Length: 146
Image (cartoon, rainbow, N blue to C red):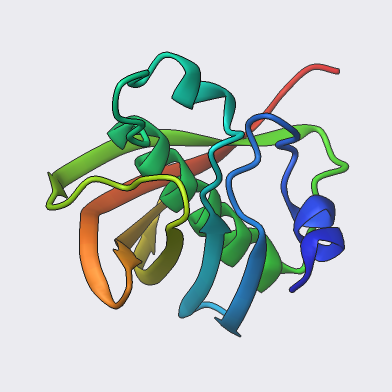
């Protein structure tokens, strides 16, 4: 999936869209994508000026966006509808190494199960083939008033 496909499936936009491309996708099973981390990211102005580090919560957000792409692409639904995909839980989050400007953050998500509208995913973020963060992420889709 290129950026145009991503924009069709996710409602996020700059500066909060945290996926640049999807390199592998298996409907209902898994997705691999990446985010090119550049010094121009707005969060680096304050986190941290003396040594820029991507905030862990944004790494988790990038992984959550990847789960949204897996879910909506599997269902063949786009972002132009009256629902939102909400993050409802994060378990076993671990951070192993800082992510810095110049890194390519590879996002890997696997669907573990779906039950009563809750999707549960095993997720990993990698840089240079090494895990920098991991978590079990739970999400759900809910109707919104437009």
